[in-house]
Length: 305
Image (cartoon, rainbow, N blue to C red; front, side, top):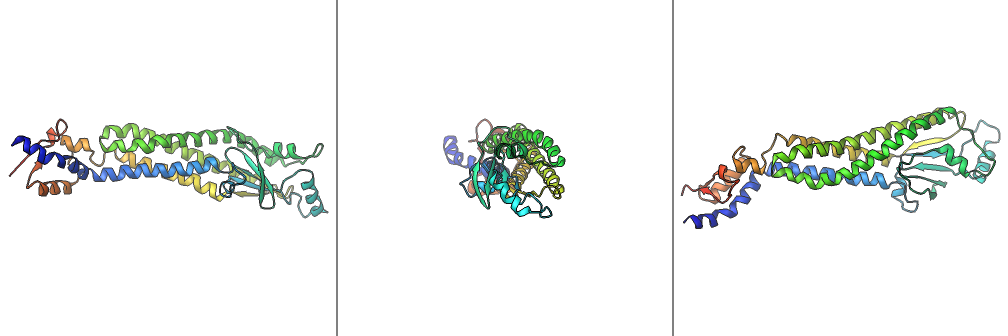
């Protein structure tokens, strides 16, 4: 009879644990999904502006500088001078990504620079390198002073975005381990915290850096007519990545003390969902699980029949 009871009730053990921990399972899978979303947006940030021919990637940039009317209209013969600026090698616009910059005329990108690690955007160097020999353009000191901040912040931003994307991958696949035991929640909480921290820090640095750079350019409008435009898509993508990672970390942190794991239920420390007990009783004719013995053998049950 004991062997028959084992065969009869063993299939119900796994089903019972699944139902008893369904709340924890939901939040665990939600955590994995949030870090998957974060990874997708981080990848979009990483690959933005690297391909001039791709219509989507070429539209993802941090900032775009319009130099098509670099000489203000208040200057005599400004239109003529602006047309001459193009003939001596100056492009109409330059836009900046994480790895490189792209340039073009009108609304069409003509070329992008080769991607480089720890890239930082130096418009002075780029413009002077593209002008004909002997040609030069003097930029206001406010812009050149802002470049010091851009160089330092760009290195941090690059490293943090790349680190966050790398950490998001194990966060996706390791988060479901917390379904089985709350012991896994602590190291997973640390991992997800670092992932969220690096993504958020990178987004803060990028936002502050390019907003300050834009204000410096706008403030020099009387001297040199450069129009700066922040990349809406890039800002949305990086903050969506940060928001998803932060929410995923908060949920993972909550699982350290909330929601019964399968080990909690099987050892009797926590009961989990009450509906699971009622469903088990109905399916076994009034039997109830002997929780203290489930860690050693989930096949043992107390039958009231």
